[in-house]
Every structure is written in C-alpha cells, then in structure tokens.
Image 1 (spheres, helix red, strand yellow):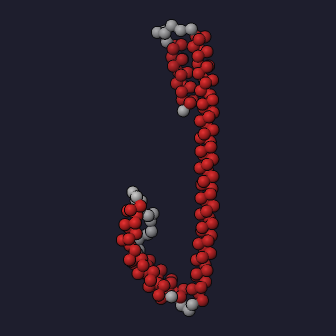
Image 2 (tube, helix red, strand yellow):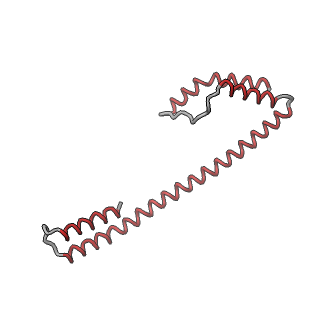
Image 3 (cartoon, helix red, strand yellow):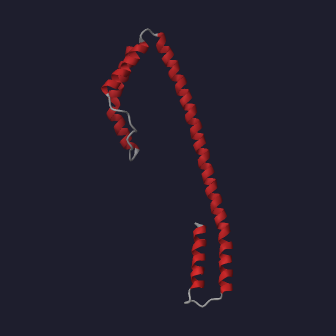
Length: 146
C-alpha cells in the first residue's frame, strides 16, 4: 500500500515537471519527493513486518492443525484396528460387518460427496435430526448382529 502511494506521488511529481502549466522549482519538487519517500519508507517497513508476523502466526496455526490431524488419524486407525481385531475373535462378526457395509453401499449407490454447506448451525442440526432415525436403525442392526 505504501509503495503505491510512493509511485502515485512520484508520478504526480513527474507530471508537474513535464507539464508546462505549473511554475515550480525543480529542486524544491525533487527535495519534496525525496522527503515523502523517506517518510513513507518506515511505514512500508512497518506494514511489511506486520504482514510477515500475521503470515507466521497463520503458518504456525496450520502446522499445529496438521499435527493434530495426523495425531487424530493415527488414534482413529489404532481404535479401528483394535475393534476390527476384536470382531475377528467373534465367529462371523467380521463377515456380518462386511455384509452390512455392502448392504449400505447397495442401498445408497450414489458416490459420496462433500457435505452440504450450512448458513448456520441450526440448519446443520435440522439435517442431522432428519437422518438420525435411519442412521440409528442401521447402527442398531449392525451392533445387535454382532
């Protein structure tokens, strides 16, 4: 932003120098432009430092979220494997779970896609309530069969 003002003021100064409509002293005009650039320079440095700090904070937050995501994925994988191994101990449980998954895939053949976006949390809750009973029924059947 500050560099845009520098360019604008320098352009205006060049316009004044090249124009015959203005009577000016080139030395005073040049000195004024140098002073303006010297004054604007610290603001440019300050704004640049602020932008860099914001970017560093954003990068740090992104790295923290990525680390948390990897940790959560590893924990979820470990929990899944533990449950899957426990299912393997029960006779036929894995097969029933796979058959249940295949049945769900057959009943809902459309390809999964990104979730709908919602204007606020109330719309999200309303949609969750709309599918709650069907999901509970499917989960109940799967758990009772195990």
